[in-house]
Image (cartoon, rainbow, N blue to C red; front, side, top):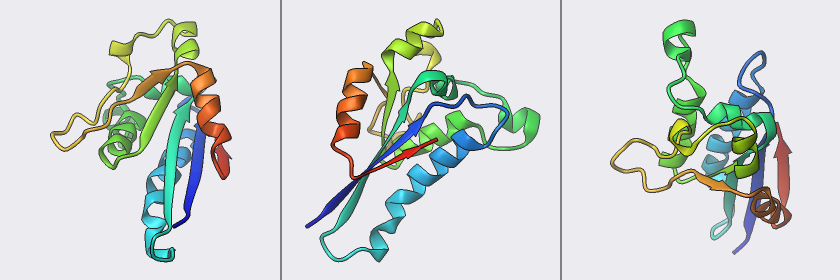
Amino acid sequence: MAITKLAFLVDKPPYKTETSRLALTHALSSQSVEIYLKDGDNVEPFLAFIGDGVLNCIKNQKALTIYDVTSLDMHIRNALLFGLNVYVCKEDIRKFGLTEDMIVMDADHPDGELKTQIVPYAEIEQAIESCDHILFF
């Protein structure tokens, strides 16, 4: 039984490019590859927001209202709902003056069991070191 560990790292802000949205889409879709794997093999992805990327995690984005596209906070909620581990760098949250109550922390759904984890960068780095593939957005 082989487990392939994937890290999706986001350090770009949520505006001017589609980079952050691509990271979230790829991380979510990575869980669907199981149909192409041998029996017993699996993929274990996680999503981490570092640097300017932590700005993607701010709650109550108005993308749907203003631009008629799904917001990144909606994607983060879906990631949590689908069982994707989401890490946000504690040092970068502080750097931007953000607090936990400003960040998407859960799926906001009865079936959502996972919560966003605000952790020191060292913990994110440790998770990265155990990965087979690192995708940087």
